[in-house]
Amino acid sequence: MKQSRRNFLKFAGLSAAGLCLAPATAAMASGGGTSKEGHAVVNSNSLHAKRWAMVIDTRKLNTEEAIEALAETCHHIHNVPTIESDQNIKWMWTGSYGEVFPEQENNFPSEDQEKHKFPLLCNHCEFPSCVRVCPTKATFKRADGIVAMDYHRCIGCRYCMAACPYGSRSFNFMDPRTHLDMDKINTKFPTRMRGVVEKCNFCVERLAVGELPACAEKSGGSIVFGDLQDPDSNVRKALRENFTIRRKPTAGTEPGVYYII
Image (cartoon, rainbow, N blue to C red; front, side, top):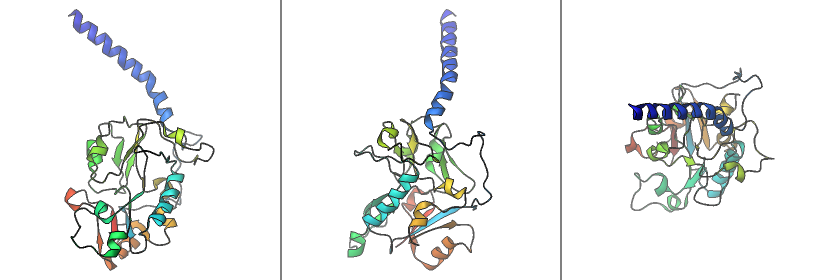
């Protein structure tokens, strides 16, 4: 009986401490992005879709330099740090054909296929395995198909990283702000903290104000972004007129990113 009472008091004490620490933790997880009134403001120009998707034309976008230029823009507006180690954070990066499409390789690739590079990012899957395994619902799927994250809810368990078949997520092993020039960060987007997972968000914050994802806007037409459920959309037109493939079809996640080969 005494032991049970001792355990109860210990649990109650830890719970109270957790409640006291929670607001401070939440405040540390974000460096901005809230209105002065403390609530979201709906922009009348915001873009909407039933299922956002992306089509990448690798006939036009296939060099390390071109893809890195898009990644640099993406990382700048999302305050993604550059860490010179295997603990680097990435929202967009490059890979060879074999790395990107391991299930669609053949024994005798063309010269172009061997030398081309392919952009990689979160696939915003129809059936995202990362959402299923997240114990705190920090990763969730929006009604428009975007797989989003609430950094405040992420506890850094990294189950999502283990579940993602595309390696699209990065973990902040250290404070990412120490690797950012805090005088040049984008104050409209939150910075993250140590112990939090992050990834591409399809520029949901830009869609909310009527702007396309930064990579699509800067790609010069090699990346098309639109509503997959709209038969008249630009992505449906691109899919209708070109041969496309998606990454790792056997994973069964139905990626929202298509590649014109």
